[in-house]
Length: 202
Image (cartoon, rainbow, N blue to C red; front, side):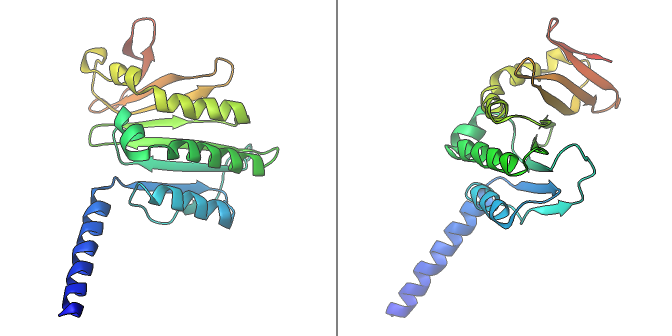
């Protein structure tokens, strides 16, 4: 009887864990170049706490100007709840881990690409080579731009619904800028005009 009861409890716990795991968003990690075993494990463990994911995959780095590029795709809308309810305090830990990866590459450094993908749109933040403080600022800004980006994505700012949007970090101005997108139906390139607060064709 006791053994049966134990099995029942274990089955219930396994089901609860499975449900919890299935309710987590999916993340994918793709590395161009290499991570050390420590970096690989630290990144995997950090993301595994909040996401369903496979082990990071690797490919050859074609860009000779950097040491490594880490690409992470979060299958979750880019919104405030991602940082307050999904990632919590670990966004800061991800920032610190990125700083370590960058530091260990020495002069070559490292670059990072973070993509937020939902059913409607893919939004990509792509950094070039950044210093320690610049990288910290870039990551902090990603955590605080959800409101303004949400306004940029309203239908009334667009000529055409956008399928994907990309922005890059500008070291001189210390901000994410140069938002550009691809139309869902017409496949044309659009850029965001900050003075008009509208998307327009190139």
